[in-house]
Image (cartoon, rainbow, N blue to C red; front, side, top):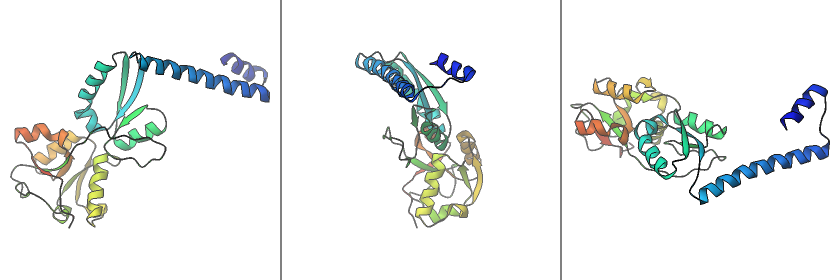
Length: 225
């Protein structure tokens, strides 16, 4: 097929209607052949090749090591090629077929994508020890709206979920007191620890800090009033 394309470019040769039909079927046959080899490998537990995997930043930092470990034990001949980015970027790359699979924290509404629930995590409100909200069992959205918020960058799943929470409470995202928009969760945690605002983060992402007593966390069962 490469030779035919070269000749067509050089000598102006083109396929007839019948030739185009044969070409289309040949390409389909080649594709089916690759799929057949993959399916046979699956049935014989010899799955191999490269898996193009995309994960959100939180999953990449706090879930990915254990996921890859378990995957490699089951499929040792498969090479995971992992890309890390925010959830919107991962979703877009799966849609564009640049990735085989994406792991993100939001529920995609894109009708062209197939989705499955792979795990569950909690979102927690985090403040430094000694913060006035640290001793509260629950916090109303209205209490948080006026406080400095260390927000995630646009396209981040946590940001979208936080915005949804405030919208459900009747508070528009542009009415929040955003102190900073940050792409790094480590930076978010650092600034929270030094009193620059509150943040909302995955439990998995702050578990070590909670155990060490360097952050106070409240479960996200906030009242929407």
